[in-house]
Length: 161
Length: 283
Picture 1: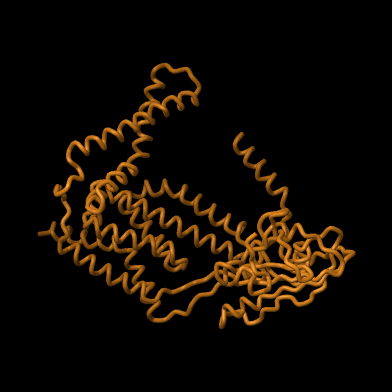
Picture 2 (picture 1 turned 45 degrees about the vertical axis):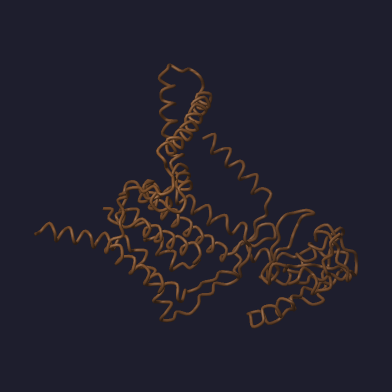
Protein backbone atom coordinates (compact mmCIF):
# COMPACT_ATOMS: atom_id res chain seq x y z
CA UNK A 1 0.00 0.00 0.00
CA UNK A 2 2.81 2.35 0.98
CA UNK A 3 4.71 1.41 -2.18
CA UNK A 4 1.67 2.02 -4.35
CA UNK A 5 1.18 5.44 -2.81
CA UNK A 6 4.77 6.50 -3.43
CA UNK A 7 4.70 5.24 -7.00
CA UNK A 8 1.47 7.07 -7.78
CA UNK A 9 2.84 10.21 -6.11
CA UNK A 10 5.98 10.12 -8.24
CA UNK A 11 3.88 9.52 -11.36
CA UNK A 12 1.66 12.47 -10.45
CA UNK A 13 4.69 14.70 -9.98
CA UNK A 14 6.09 13.69 -13.37
CA UNK A 15 2.76 14.13 -15.10
CA UNK A 16 2.15 17.42 -13.32
CA UNK A 17 5.06 18.93 -15.24
CA UNK A 18 3.59 17.90 -18.58
CA UNK A 19 0.77 19.40 -20.53
CA UNK A 20 -1.12 16.74 -22.46
CA UNK A 21 -3.25 17.83 -25.39
CA UNK A 22 -4.94 16.01 -28.22
CA UNK A 23 -3.61 16.64 -31.73
CA UNK A 24 -6.60 18.79 -32.78
CA UNK A 25 -6.44 20.79 -29.60
CA UNK A 26 -2.73 21.38 -30.03
CA UNK A 27 -2.91 22.61 -33.60
CA UNK A 28 -6.04 24.74 -33.15
CA UNK A 29 -4.65 26.63 -30.17
CA UNK A 30 -4.22 30.30 -31.01
CA UNK A 31 -1.03 31.87 -29.81
CA UNK A 32 -1.14 35.37 -28.40
CA UNK A 33 0.08 37.91 -30.90
CA UNK A 34 3.68 38.84 -30.21
CA UNK A 35 5.37 42.19 -30.41
CA UNK A 36 8.12 41.19 -32.83
CA UNK A 37 8.22 39.52 -36.22
CA UNK A 38 11.00 37.30 -37.51
CA UNK A 39 11.39 35.53 -40.84
CA UNK A 40 11.91 31.80 -40.74
CA UNK A 41 13.26 29.46 -43.41
CA UNK A 42 13.59 25.70 -43.04
CA UNK A 43 15.43 24.00 -45.87
CA UNK A 44 16.94 20.59 -46.56
CA UNK A 45 18.10 20.79 -50.20
CA UNK A 46 21.32 19.06 -49.14
CA UNK A 47 19.38 16.03 -47.92
CA UNK A 48 17.36 15.87 -51.17
CA UNK A 49 20.63 15.87 -53.10
CA UNK A 50 22.12 13.26 -50.76
CA UNK A 51 19.15 10.88 -50.97
CA UNK A 52 18.93 11.18 -54.75
CA UNK A 53 15.82 9.33 -55.92
CA UNK A 54 14.44 9.12 -52.40
CA UNK A 55 10.92 9.98 -51.37
CA UNK A 56 11.75 13.59 -50.59
CA UNK A 57 11.69 15.69 -53.75
CA UNK A 58 11.46 19.21 -52.32
CA UNK A 59 13.87 20.69 -49.83
CA UNK A 60 11.92 23.84 -49.00
CA UNK A 61 9.93 22.98 -45.90
CA UNK A 62 9.32 26.64 -45.02
CA UNK A 63 10.43 29.67 -47.01
CA UNK A 64 10.47 33.21 -45.61
CA UNK A 65 7.67 32.46 -43.22
CA UNK A 66 6.82 35.34 -40.91
CA UNK A 67 6.40 34.40 -37.26
CA UNK A 68 5.29 36.76 -34.57
CA UNK A 69 7.13 36.19 -31.32
CA UNK A 70 7.05 37.66 -27.86
CA UNK A 71 9.61 39.33 -25.64
CA UNK A 72 12.57 37.07 -24.83
CA UNK A 73 11.58 34.35 -27.29
CA UNK A 74 14.41 32.23 -28.60
CA UNK A 75 15.18 30.60 -31.95
CA UNK A 76 13.54 27.45 -30.64
CA UNK A 77 10.33 29.29 -29.72
CA UNK A 78 10.13 30.75 -33.23
CA UNK A 79 10.55 27.31 -34.79
CA UNK A 80 8.00 25.82 -32.42
CA UNK A 81 5.41 28.47 -33.26
CA UNK A 82 5.94 28.16 -37.00
CA UNK A 83 5.75 24.36 -36.88
CA UNK A 84 2.56 24.53 -34.86
CA UNK A 85 0.93 26.93 -37.32
CA UNK A 86 1.97 24.94 -40.38
CA UNK A 87 1.46 21.54 -38.71
CA UNK A 88 5.03 20.44 -39.34
CA UNK A 89 6.44 17.60 -37.28
CA UNK A 90 9.58 18.25 -35.26
CA UNK A 91 11.33 16.60 -32.39
CA UNK A 92 13.55 18.03 -29.71
CA UNK A 93 15.28 16.63 -26.70
CA UNK A 94 16.50 18.23 -23.50
CA UNK A 95 15.47 21.59 -22.16
CA UNK A 96 16.94 24.99 -21.36
CA UNK A 97 20.36 25.77 -22.82
CA UNK A 98 21.01 22.20 -23.87
CA UNK A 99 17.84 21.83 -25.92
CA UNK A 100 18.54 20.14 -29.23
CA UNK A 101 16.50 19.73 -32.40
CA UNK A 102 16.77 16.13 -33.55
CA UNK A 103 14.52 16.28 -36.57
CA UNK A 104 12.17 18.53 -38.55
CA UNK A 105 9.49 17.25 -40.95
CA UNK A 106 10.48 13.57 -40.39
CA UNK A 107 14.06 14.34 -41.40
CA UNK A 108 16.33 13.40 -38.51
CA UNK A 109 19.96 13.79 -37.64
CA UNK A 110 22.27 11.08 -39.05
CA UNK A 111 19.82 10.22 -41.84
CA UNK A 112 22.31 11.46 -44.43
CA UNK A 113 25.53 10.11 -42.99
CA UNK A 114 27.32 10.47 -39.68
CA UNK A 115 27.91 14.20 -40.13
CA UNK A 116 24.32 15.18 -40.83
CA UNK A 117 21.83 17.14 -38.77
CA UNK A 118 20.01 20.46 -38.41
CA UNK A 119 21.89 23.74 -37.92
CA UNK A 120 20.56 27.25 -37.74
CA UNK A 121 21.80 30.73 -38.52
CA UNK A 122 20.51 34.14 -37.46
CA UNK A 123 21.06 36.95 -39.99
CA UNK A 124 23.58 34.81 -41.85
CA UNK A 125 25.70 34.00 -38.80
CA UNK A 126 25.87 30.61 -37.12
CA UNK A 127 25.95 31.15 -33.37
CA UNK A 128 27.83 28.38 -31.55
CA UNK A 129 25.08 28.04 -28.99
CA UNK A 130 22.01 25.96 -28.34
CA UNK A 131 18.89 27.19 -30.14
CA UNK A 132 17.09 27.85 -26.88
CA UNK A 133 19.72 30.25 -25.59
CA UNK A 134 19.71 32.72 -28.48
CA UNK A 135 17.03 35.38 -28.11
CA UNK A 136 15.68 37.05 -31.22
CA UNK A 137 14.98 40.67 -31.94
CA UNK A 138 12.53 42.28 -34.36
CA UNK A 139 13.25 41.65 -38.05
CA UNK A 140 15.76 38.86 -37.54
CA UNK A 141 16.13 36.33 -40.32
CA UNK A 142 16.39 32.75 -39.01
CA UNK A 143 17.36 29.85 -41.23
CA UNK A 144 17.28 26.18 -40.26
CA UNK A 145 19.46 24.27 -42.70
CA UNK A 146 20.15 20.57 -42.95
CA UNK A 147 23.78 19.65 -43.36
CA UNK A 148 25.25 16.37 -44.55
CA UNK A 149 28.85 17.41 -43.86
CA UNK A 150 29.02 19.01 -40.40
CA UNK A 151 28.13 22.43 -41.81
CA UNK A 152 30.62 22.57 -44.68
CA UNK A 153 27.87 22.29 -47.33
CA UNK A 154 25.80 25.15 -45.89
CA UNK A 155 28.61 27.62 -45.26
CA UNK A 156 29.48 26.82 -41.67
CA UNK A 157 32.65 24.75 -41.90
CA UNK A 158 33.58 23.22 -38.57
CA UNK A 159 36.73 24.73 -37.10
CA UNK A 160 38.70 23.23 -34.26
CA UNK A 161 39.28 25.87 -31.63
CA UNK B 1 9.75 -34.30 -24.45
CA UNK B 2 13.21 -33.07 -25.22
CA UNK B 3 14.78 -34.90 -28.13
CA UNK B 4 16.13 -31.70 -29.68
CA UNK B 5 18.63 -31.70 -26.83
CA UNK B 6 20.16 -34.94 -28.08
CA UNK B 7 21.26 -33.41 -31.34
CA UNK B 8 24.89 -32.37 -31.74
CA UNK B 9 25.77 -29.29 -29.57
CA UNK B 10 27.45 -27.53 -32.49
CA UNK B 11 24.24 -27.70 -34.50
CA UNK B 12 22.12 -26.63 -31.52
CA UNK B 13 24.35 -23.59 -30.99
CA UNK B 14 24.15 -22.64 -34.69
CA UNK B 15 20.39 -22.99 -34.58
CA UNK B 16 19.96 -20.69 -31.60
CA UNK B 17 22.42 -18.10 -32.91
CA UNK B 18 20.59 -17.97 -36.24
CA UNK B 19 17.11 -17.74 -34.75
CA UNK B 20 17.97 -15.05 -32.19
CA UNK B 21 19.93 -12.93 -34.67
CA UNK B 22 17.17 -13.16 -37.23
CA UNK B 23 14.55 -12.22 -34.65
CA UNK B 24 16.51 -9.23 -33.37
CA UNK B 25 17.46 -7.74 -36.74
CA UNK B 26 14.37 -8.40 -38.83
CA UNK B 27 11.96 -5.80 -37.31
CA UNK B 28 9.23 -7.38 -39.35
CA UNK B 29 6.00 -8.35 -37.59
CA UNK B 30 5.59 -11.52 -39.67
CA UNK B 31 8.98 -12.92 -38.69
CA UNK B 32 8.68 -11.72 -35.11
CA UNK B 33 5.28 -13.21 -34.40
CA UNK B 34 6.35 -16.56 -35.84
CA UNK B 35 9.56 -16.39 -33.81
CA UNK B 36 7.62 -15.69 -30.62
CA UNK B 37 5.18 -18.53 -31.33
CA UNK B 38 8.04 -20.93 -32.03
CA UNK B 39 9.89 -19.92 -28.86
CA UNK B 40 6.73 -20.25 -26.75
CA UNK B 41 5.95 -23.67 -28.20
CA UNK B 42 9.51 -24.80 -27.60
CA UNK B 43 9.42 -23.54 -24.00
CA UNK B 44 6.07 -25.27 -23.42
CA UNK B 45 7.55 -28.47 -24.79
CA UNK B 46 10.64 -28.56 -22.60
CA UNK B 47 9.43 -26.85 -19.43
CA UNK B 48 5.76 -27.70 -19.30
CA UNK B 49 2.69 -25.49 -19.12
CA UNK B 50 3.10 -24.57 -15.44
CA UNK B 51 6.61 -23.08 -15.63
CA UNK B 52 5.83 -21.13 -18.78
CA UNK B 53 2.53 -19.82 -17.41
CA UNK B 54 4.32 -18.58 -14.28
CA UNK B 55 6.93 -16.80 -16.37
CA UNK B 56 4.49 -14.98 -18.63
CA UNK B 57 3.73 -12.22 -16.11
CA UNK B 58 7.35 -11.05 -15.91
CA UNK B 59 7.81 -11.14 -19.67
CA UNK B 60 4.59 -9.25 -20.20
CA UNK B 61 5.90 -6.52 -17.88
CA UNK B 62 9.05 -6.20 -20.03
CA UNK B 63 6.91 -6.07 -23.17
CA UNK B 64 4.58 -3.47 -21.67
CA UNK B 65 7.42 -1.22 -20.49
CA UNK B 66 9.05 -1.22 -23.93
CA UNK B 67 5.76 -0.65 -25.76
CA UNK B 68 4.83 2.29 -23.53
CA UNK B 69 8.24 3.98 -23.19
CA UNK B 70 9.12 3.98 -26.90
CA UNK B 71 6.46 6.55 -27.90
CA UNK B 72 7.53 8.73 -24.96
CA UNK B 73 11.09 8.96 -26.27
CA UNK B 74 10.61 8.73 -30.02
CA UNK B 75 8.35 11.33 -31.61
CA UNK B 76 8.74 10.41 -35.24
CA UNK B 77 5.64 9.39 -37.19
CA UNK B 78 2.85 10.82 -39.31
CA UNK B 79 -0.14 10.04 -37.04
CA UNK B 80 -0.12 12.17 -33.91
CA UNK B 81 -2.23 10.73 -31.11
CA UNK B 82 -1.63 13.55 -28.63
CA UNK B 83 0.99 16.06 -27.59
CA UNK B 84 3.11 16.20 -24.46
CA UNK B 85 4.99 19.49 -24.06
CA UNK B 86 5.08 20.22 -27.81
CA UNK B 87 6.37 16.74 -28.58
CA UNK B 88 3.97 14.50 -30.43
CA UNK B 89 3.22 10.98 -29.29
CA UNK B 90 2.57 8.97 -32.41
CA UNK B 91 0.86 5.76 -33.43
CA UNK B 92 3.95 4.74 -35.43
CA UNK B 93 6.21 5.01 -32.39
CA UNK B 94 3.75 2.97 -30.34
CA UNK B 95 3.57 0.22 -32.96
CA UNK B 96 7.35 0.25 -33.22
CA UNK B 97 7.50 -0.16 -29.44
CA UNK B 98 5.13 -3.12 -29.61
CA UNK B 99 7.26 -4.74 -32.32
CA UNK B 100 10.41 -4.10 -30.30
CA UNK B 101 8.73 -5.59 -27.24
CA UNK B 102 7.76 -8.73 -29.14
CA UNK B 103 11.33 -9.02 -30.42
CA UNK B 104 12.80 -8.74 -26.93
CA UNK B 105 10.32 -11.17 -25.38
CA UNK B 106 10.81 -13.73 -28.12
CA UNK B 107 14.60 -13.54 -27.73
CA UNK B 108 14.20 -13.93 -23.97
CA UNK B 109 12.15 -17.06 -24.54
CA UNK B 110 14.71 -18.42 -26.98
CA UNK B 111 17.40 -17.90 -24.36
CA UNK B 112 15.24 -19.57 -21.76
CA UNK B 113 15.04 -22.66 -23.97
CA UNK B 114 18.74 -22.40 -24.77
CA UNK B 115 19.67 -22.38 -21.08
CA UNK B 116 17.49 -25.39 -20.49
CA UNK B 117 19.09 -27.37 -23.29
CA UNK B 118 22.68 -26.19 -23.38
CA UNK B 119 24.25 -27.40 -20.11
CA UNK B 120 27.82 -26.89 -18.96
CA UNK B 121 28.96 -30.14 -20.55
CA UNK B 122 27.85 -28.88 -23.95
CA UNK B 123 29.51 -25.52 -23.33
CA UNK B 124 32.77 -27.27 -22.54
CA UNK B 125 32.42 -29.41 -25.64
CA UNK B 126 31.80 -26.52 -28.03
CA UNK B 127 34.09 -23.86 -26.60
CA UNK B 128 36.63 -26.09 -24.89
CA UNK B 129 38.50 -26.78 -28.09
CA UNK B 130 38.61 -23.17 -29.20
CA UNK B 131 39.77 -21.84 -25.86
CA UNK B 132 39.71 -24.01 -22.74
CA UNK B 133 40.16 -21.03 -20.43
CA UNK B 134 37.20 -19.24 -21.95
CA UNK B 135 35.05 -22.36 -21.66
CA UNK B 136 35.74 -22.69 -17.94
CA UNK B 137 35.17 -18.97 -17.40
CA UNK B 138 31.86 -19.02 -19.30
CA UNK B 139 30.53 -22.09 -17.59
CA UNK B 140 31.54 -20.74 -14.17
CA UNK B 141 29.94 -17.36 -14.85
CA UNK B 142 26.69 -18.91 -15.99
CA UNK B 143 26.63 -21.08 -12.93
CA UNK B 144 27.51 -18.22 -10.58
CA UNK B 145 24.17 -16.51 -10.06
CA UNK B 146 21.95 -19.59 -9.58
CA UNK B 147 24.53 -21.01 -7.19
CA UNK B 148 24.73 -17.73 -5.31
CA UNK B 149 20.95 -17.63 -4.86
CA UNK B 150 20.90 -21.24 -3.71
CA UNK B 151 23.69 -20.69 -1.17
CA UNK B 152 22.14 -17.47 0.02
CA UNK B 153 18.87 -19.23 0.83
CA UNK B 154 20.73 -21.92 2.75
CA UNK B 155 22.81 -19.47 4.78
CA UNK B 156 19.85 -17.22 5.43
CA UNK B 157 17.71 -20.10 6.66
CA UNK B 158 20.50 -21.27 8.93
CA UNK B 159 20.82 -17.77 10.39
CA UNK B 160 17.08 -17.61 10.96
CA UNK B 161 17.16 -20.88 12.88
CA UNK B 162 19.85 -19.56 15.21
CA UNK B 163 17.08 -17.59 16.99
CA UNK B 164 18.35 -14.51 15.23
CA UNK B 165 16.49 -11.41 16.42
CA UNK B 166 18.24 -8.88 14.21
CA UNK B 167 16.21 -6.96 11.67
CA UNK B 168 15.83 -8.55 8.27
CA UNK B 169 18.17 -6.17 6.47
CA UNK B 170 21.05 -6.81 8.89
CA UNK B 171 20.60 -10.55 8.54
CA UNK B 172 20.55 -10.27 4.74
CA UNK B 173 23.75 -8.23 4.77
CA UNK B 174 25.65 -10.70 6.94
CA UNK B 175 24.38 -13.70 4.95
CA UNK B 176 25.28 -11.94 1.74
CA UNK B 177 28.85 -11.25 2.79
CA UNK B 178 29.24 -14.87 3.90
CA UNK B 179 27.92 -16.11 0.57
CA UNK B 180 30.18 -13.80 -1.44
CA UNK B 181 33.33 -14.96 0.32
CA UNK B 182 32.20 -18.56 -0.06
CA UNK B 183 31.68 -18.20 -3.79
CA UNK B 184 35.01 -16.44 -4.29
CA UNK B 185 36.71 -19.27 -2.51
CA UNK B 186 34.82 -21.76 -4.67
CA UNK B 187 36.01 -20.04 -7.83
CA UNK B 188 39.64 -20.27 -6.74
CA UNK B 189 39.24 -23.91 -5.69
CA UNK B 190 37.59 -24.80 -8.99
CA UNK B 191 40.36 -23.31 -11.09
CA UNK B 192 43.03 -24.89 -8.89
CA UNK B 193 41.47 -28.30 -9.12
CA UNK B 194 41.07 -27.97 -12.89
CA UNK B 195 44.77 -27.14 -13.15
CA UNK B 196 45.69 -30.04 -10.85
CA UNK B 197 43.96 -32.40 -13.25
CA UNK B 198 45.94 -31.06 -16.15
CA UNK B 199 43.10 -29.19 -17.83
CA UNK B 200 44.21 -27.18 -20.88
CA UNK B 201 47.49 -29.06 -21.15
CA UNK B 202 48.67 -29.65 -24.71
CA UNK B 203 47.71 -32.90 -26.39
CA UNK B 204 45.28 -33.89 -23.70
CA UNK B 205 42.15 -35.66 -24.91
CA UNK B 206 38.81 -35.77 -23.20
CA UNK B 207 35.81 -38.01 -23.35
CA UNK B 208 32.58 -36.63 -24.76
CA UNK B 209 29.28 -38.22 -25.44
CA UNK B 210 28.67 -36.20 -28.56
CA UNK B 211 29.22 -37.55 -32.01
CA UNK B 212 28.11 -36.07 -35.27
CA UNK B 213 25.81 -38.81 -36.49
CA UNK B 214 23.86 -39.21 -39.71
CA UNK B 215 20.76 -37.94 -37.96
CA UNK B 216 22.60 -34.66 -37.11
CA UNK B 217 23.76 -34.42 -40.71
CA UNK B 218 20.22 -34.70 -42.06
CA UNK B 219 18.80 -32.11 -39.64
CA UNK B 220 21.73 -29.76 -40.29
CA UNK B 221 21.20 -30.13 -44.05
CA UNK B 222 17.50 -29.25 -43.76
CA UNK B 223 18.35 -26.33 -41.47
CA UNK B 224 20.99 -24.89 -43.81
CA UNK B 225 18.67 -25.23 -46.79
CA UNK B 226 15.82 -23.41 -45.00
CA UNK B 227 18.18 -20.77 -43.58
CA UNK B 228 19.56 -20.05 -47.04
CA UNK B 229 16.01 -19.71 -48.38
CA UNK B 230 14.99 -17.37 -45.59
CA UNK B 231 17.89 -14.96 -46.07
CA UNK B 232 17.75 -14.76 -49.88
CA UNK B 233 14.98 -12.21 -50.05
CA UNK B 234 13.89 -10.82 -46.76
CA UNK B 235 10.57 -9.10 -46.64
CA UNK B 236 11.19 -5.65 -45.20
CA UNK B 237 9.02 -3.36 -43.16
CA UNK B 238 9.66 0.20 -42.03
CA UNK B 239 7.82 2.29 -39.48
CA UNK B 240 8.94 5.92 -39.71
CA UNK B 241 7.37 8.25 -40.72
CA UNK B 242 4.70 5.97 -42.24
CA UNK B 243 4.28 2.22 -42.20
CA UNK B 244 5.83 0.92 -45.39
CA UNK B 245 5.54 -2.73 -46.25
CA UNK B 246 7.53 -4.00 -49.21
CA UNK B 247 5.53 -5.92 -51.82
CA UNK B 248 5.22 -9.65 -51.45
CA UNK B 249 7.01 -11.55 -54.13
CA UNK B 250 7.22 -15.31 -54.49
CA UNK B 251 10.73 -15.30 -53.02
CA UNK B 252 9.84 -13.20 -49.99
CA UNK B 253 6.83 -15.42 -49.29
CA UNK B 254 9.11 -18.47 -49.51
CA UNK B 255 11.49 -16.73 -47.12
CA UNK B 256 8.69 -16.10 -44.59
CA UNK B 257 7.47 -19.69 -44.80
CA UNK B 258 10.94 -21.18 -44.47
CA UNK B 259 11.66 -19.03 -41.42
CA UNK B 260 8.37 -20.25 -39.98
CA UNK B 261 9.50 -23.86 -40.50
CA UNK B 262 12.93 -23.15 -38.95
CA UNK B 263 11.24 -21.74 -35.88
CA UNK B 264 9.07 -24.85 -35.60
CA UNK B 265 12.03 -27.18 -36.18
CA UNK B 266 12.34 -28.34 -32.52
CA UNK B 267 8.62 -29.05 -32.44
CA UNK B 268 8.62 -30.91 -35.74
CA UNK B 269 11.65 -32.91 -34.65
CA UNK B 270 9.87 -33.82 -31.44
CA UNK B 271 6.81 -34.96 -33.37
CA UNK B 272 8.97 -37.08 -35.66
CA UNK B 273 10.74 -38.73 -32.72
CA UNK B 274 7.39 -39.30 -31.04
CA UNK B 275 6.04 -41.03 -34.14
CA UNK B 276 9.12 -43.20 -34.33
CA UNK B 277 8.86 -44.20 -30.67
CA UNK B 278 5.15 -44.91 -31.13
CA UNK B 279 5.76 -47.15 -34.14
CA UNK B 280 8.67 -48.84 -32.33
CA UNK B 281 6.47 -49.58 -29.35
CA UNK B 282 4.01 -51.42 -31.58
CA UNK B 283 6.53 -53.89 -32.86
